[in-house]
Amino acid sequence: MSALSRFSHTLRRELFSDFAADTTGTHVYFRGLELFLLVYTVYFCWTWGGYIQQNISSVLLPLGLANYIDVSFMFAHNVALLNAALIGVLGLVGFFRLWRPAYLLALFAFHLQYVARYSLGEISHGSNLVGMGVLGLGLALLFFRDEEHRRRFTFGFLYFFIGLGYTSAAVCKLIGTGITWPDGRHLLMWIAERKVDTLSKFGAFEPSLLQEMTLQDYRFGTLFLVFGLLTEAISFLMWWRKLRYVVVLLVIGMHIGIFLTMNIFFHASTYLLLLLGLPWHRIIDAVLERSRTLAFSG
Amino acid sequence: MQFPSRALRVVGGILVAYALLVATHLGEFWPFSIYPMFSQAGNPWTRAVVRKLPSQADPDTLSWDAVSLQDLPGTSYPVAPKGINQNDVANYVSKTDRWTDERVQGLRSLFTKGRTLSSPLFVFRVRGTLETDSVAVTATPVLLFAPDTTRLHPSSTARTVASAPPS
Image (tube, rainbow over all chains, first blue to last red; front, side, top):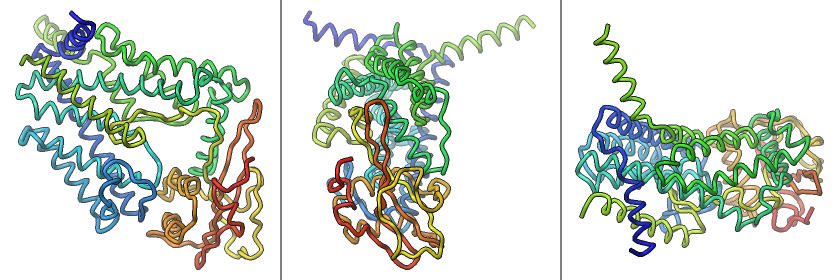
């Protein structure tokens, strides 16, 4: 067996063999994850819809499909809000399994909403994991008829691409800056940048404890950055079931660190990682089993 | 085909599409990304700050000189309570190579679409550079949005990041 086929065999086993038991826990967990992704999708699209309608009138930086189609039609006549409503309807159609392409069409409309919202030049990554989640659900619904297979595919898909994404971020840092990336003075620069942003947004800035520590001695910043870089670099290890929960919890820790040092909170990504970072299906089954035992013994 | 093999094939197909799309779109094709944020550490950065001037301020006598953050004129104009995204203001200020009428109107509309200006707003480009173990921050005025007029920095070289002298 070649190395590639051994690796492919390992990935099949590690990514897609979990969540096979059709218990209440796996069912509730999967539908809960699905609902979480849909609620966040609707939240992003409505928020962006209002912002597009209120503030955006031109395309400064075309992203994604905006490179090929003029998305300025999204800026007026409530088109962005109508698109958000359409995404909500398609989400419900997918959730209730009424039409198999529904989630993928919702993702297409979600993409249009994103490229219209960020056409002014900012590239936000806050919604990427939710978008990947909708893509995973869309593919699961389109390619698999069995609910158990859809569940196993969606979780495996998410662990694969989330792990890959964070490791890619570490590779970008090593290519963009090199091995000196975790130099604490770089964190000084980002803290100063966040200070200007916070002053601009709210008119005042109060440094957090970790920011104070870095401003006092930038070597604390080096420690924080080393932890962040190492965590990102090993994120692909969440492909393996034995390491999965530890790695996901480390990534959550890194997000908390980013929030405390740079005032940036990727709320959707962090909450999604919390959903993926613990074996919730086993916890739900254990709680149900315990309640049943207590009910019988009582 | 068995489920795990089919699932891996679908993942493989998406991986190929992912790689092709990010490779041909500068690393970003939402929801696909190579996640390059913060990859270039230590480089100078450019952001924006907006200040509110007294309503009687005379645009003809304003100073367009660069100042430190502590010496900014007027009072702060926090953009978040107005529903304006700080990053959008910063992107206009940092990514505009030439202030065409469309660009000027695009930025002005962030402050005027759906609301009226009661006082002049002074938009500053703020630049941070690393100097040994500290960060030097300078703010250069770029645009003035008065209720009935818009003024650009009188020096065309000072208006954009590309043409600004290195700090």
